[in-house]
Length: 194
Image (cartoon, rainbow, N blue to C red; front, side, top):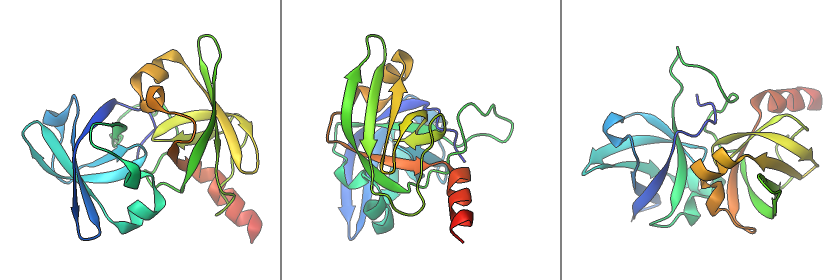
């Protein structure tokens, strides 16, 4: 389980294709602390460390991950948000994040608000995925608070610290992002549908 509090930004060093799988080599500040078989969130996608060498580590994405996330668009030299799993005795700073992307969304607007930024995203209205104002949403692995909520859109505001220490500073209008909706909201929506 994750909290959506991004620990660092990792650089994608190399992408290798093998049948329908994609292997990604990354570098980050704490590679020496990682171990093989460890789960790490990459832009909100839970991926397992499968190799570590030469100051980098490797993860593998299978077709299900490629179909559901924006990983298929990743490029060598670009950056992703990363977070290691929350330790059982750790502080819970964000919200419950599983690292299981529900769907992708598109950034449709970025507003500079003179000291902060407001980002608006749209998504297909499927699978009981809902947002509520002041509720939680995970965008590219970042735990955020919903500002405006629509049937297939929402906005979030980004403080300067989050902007500088995540991939939000690289995000452009038209970019695809990974979305994980609040788990409690998903359960409630499913129960109400029955």
